[in-house]
Length: 72
Image 1 (cartoon, rainbow, N blue to C red):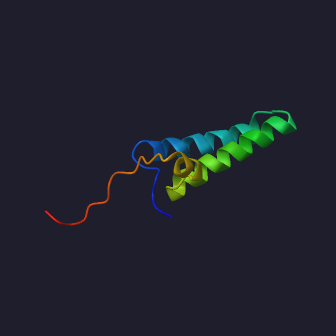
Image 2 (cartoon, rainbow, N blue to C red; image 1 turned 90 degrees about the vertical axis):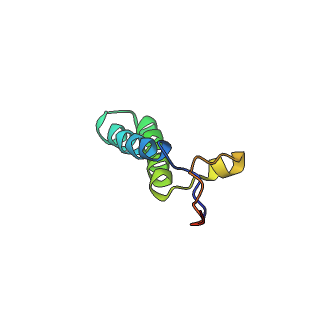
């Protein structure tokens, strides 16, 4: 897997994932609402943590900075 989630987007996904997991756990939502919050939060957290998003790959989006080759 190559990185396609980077820059500012990565920490935003991680924070959003944590917030949504917390909402799903503690907001007193109906079961279907908590389930949606858990799934979306988990996806956001995992894609932010590993730096790869399958949806971005399908859409051809890459927010990772280009890798430096070490050449001047």
